[in-house]
Amino acid sequence: MTKKEFILNPSPFNDRLDQVEFGKLDWLLVNEIEAEQFTRENTPEAVWQNVHNRYPKLSLLLTQGSRGSFAFRVNKASWEKEFQRAYPVKAVDTTGAGDTYTGFFISSLMKNLPLTECMRRASMAAAISVMRSGAARSIPSAEEVEKAVLQKMNEDREFSSRPEYLPGLARE
Image (cartoon, rainbow, N blue to C red; front, side, top):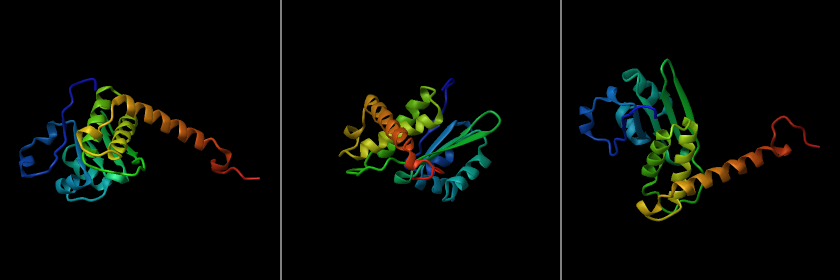
């Protein structure tokens, strides 16, 4: 972030949010339940359209647990959309996963990382956290997340470079 940005994560969503001046915010971070409570919509695109129509300068992060997350970032003259899949892991305890995602997402925004990188790191942090018990003690370190992201990127690169997985290549 090059300027001060105001970010709201209204969890849990309640009637007190009627007093919030959402037009003064830069980011709204919600899970799918909070998004539906706020907009009465249940798809990421419909939620975004609802939010964007009411608050044209407000960016949106919508998390959907194991189904991934969507971000809609407002730029000066337009907006960008990104999707990040959730990393498939065997969950032990999902307590704190959303808070972990949120913390790593905001931390990455503060480092001016591209939106895709913010989401990738946040998703990896949440994946690591659900493989552990507890809330605060399940939160991984930044170094642990960075190492896991790099490892996953290398695995994906190796997988996609195998000829048998390249689309359009005939097998002999």
